Image 1 (tube, helix red, strand yellow):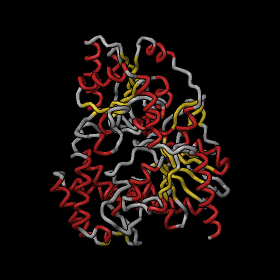
Image 2 (cartoon, rainbow, N blue to C red):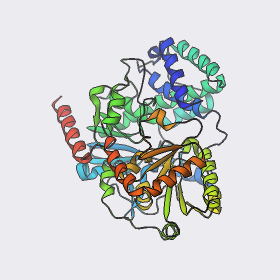
Image 3 (cartoon, one colour):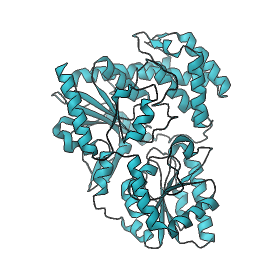
Image 4 (cartoon, rainbow, N blue to C red):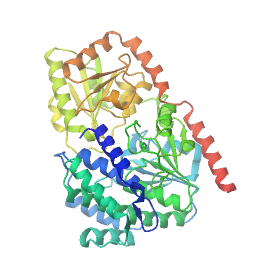
Length: 496
């Protein structure tokens, strides 16, 4: 089902059912959690691809980590940031978290970075040192109540949580299964599993937060079971939780937008720091976050990296030298198969027309699929999914994606965009960026090539206008904005 149609379906549910009556025994309203779960379940129910299988070696690595306790500091931590392995990029010989590590210039030793493994549960192996001054690899220890509570629930169905207005939830599950044409029992199991993990993880986070007593918690991506459990734990302990924008926010993004007014703010971070007013305005009108707590900050890493020098990988440098124009295509794990099929067609068409344009294909960090088959195409260079998008943007002439944040970041580097429309996911419907001057959209390889030829023939003027257009999305002086607001917030908290 089209993401916009899913959004409209959930809006219909919120109009027809008393969704905020669905609570846990402790009073936590869990509809904000459930609506996200419904969105992702419906969107990916038809996907034939499955997440990477965990090998025996991976299992052993995970088991070894489970045996160890979480290494928390013996002293109090001022600011803790929760991130994931996919956010680290190799920079100047160290693995750098692009959302949290720039903040060391502001926070210094006050910041501690807590990092979760990948979605598969496998922790990425870093070949070089980690940049973060204070780094804690997060996991759920084997010798913890959380591990065994989740285990007993998954194996025996034993639960320690009670859902109030459970009848309303069951009616919603029945309705969704009919309207979205999904298996009712599978949907129910998926929802209840997520609620269980949320409940036990909230207990886990409350215990951690009590032991370290942070003055504020930074979160990369505020939606998802773990993220929402952390936000709610902070809420119950009166610790300010701040989400840092990590992707495109649109008027149809359920993680930030509700069309129905509600006082229910449970399970979401207290504050949201956005890239700029364009996104803040969307969220402030979205009935989910408190409008006064949506703050336009900017993107510290983007500003920092624009001024830095990059060294080119030898193989990539050699590939680039073969082409007069180079195109970077950043994939999305949600529509990875469709993008790859489009890229193959595009490659063949460019080759057939003898157009001297090289394609660099960058998989999404969360993509578990194998894209090695692209290497057989002479005009395609396949990068690692962990390669730094900002390094690549400095090297190429034109950028393309479906609906990745990289489309915005490309503008800041003066790189024109061509958005690919797949699975009826239309960029103009979700964000106002396609202006047919700096950003274009294509539904076929032929239309894509027409845009390429237009950009190449007018490159200098289009590139200048592209960089100017980026000011619409990114507020300047990001680090100064962050420091100013955070200091104000902590002063208020200390006064309270």
